[in-house]
Image 1 (cartoon, rainbow, N blue to C red):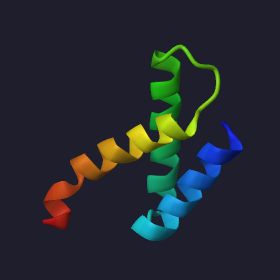
Image 2 (tube, rainbow, N blue to C red):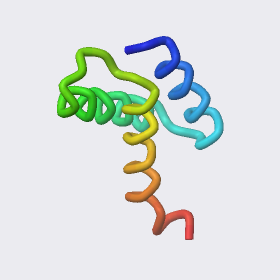
Image 3 (cartoon, one colour):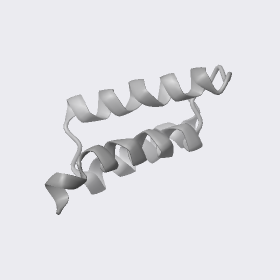
Image 4 (cartoon, rainbow, N blue to C red):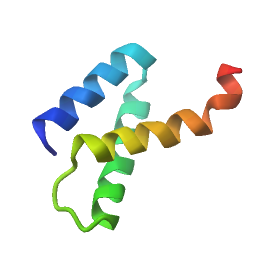
Length: 63
């Protein structure tokens, strides 16, 4: 995982008040996205995509 991706996730954790489980699930999803893209390392782009899916799946809670 790139340093930028990790920092991005830490910032999102603070702003979105992610739990430890939410943090880890987002990290795992970003790893899967990177793998599907054929990348060995998780980038900030992969992390942003994982967070976007998380927000979409929780949008009913935010409404």
